[in-house]
Length: 159
Image (cartoon, rainbow, N blue to C red; front, side, top):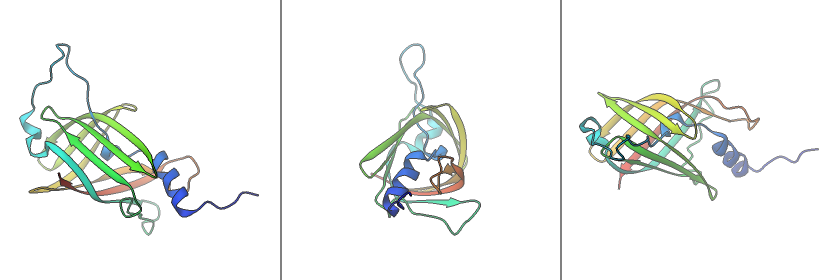
């Protein structure tokens, strides 16, 4: 008989199994080895840290843990070229995603290249040094190894 897992352990496993397209990050360099600035992403350039990261189960919206409240740390580093790195750390383990982003009005498009290629979009609100990102994601809420449809609401501050 299997022992029930503690809540923190289950959440840690869920986070590690989670694919957060919203937090995808850093693209590859051009053939010349240099990366040109992209003026379209200028408002997002900098190092951001999440103060809130709520992942809501689409099938059961009453399931909506705030990963930051549960001890996670999420950082989002945007370079002038649009390259970015997103790192989620929880219970001493980290997950890094890298890719390239573009901004069109309040729609952020992320072309993740690592750990696997994926394109996602989210709506953002930027007010001074506060950034809010909302969009679809996946998360293994029941820890069966299969991510479920979810939405992410991430609030960040520029550091």
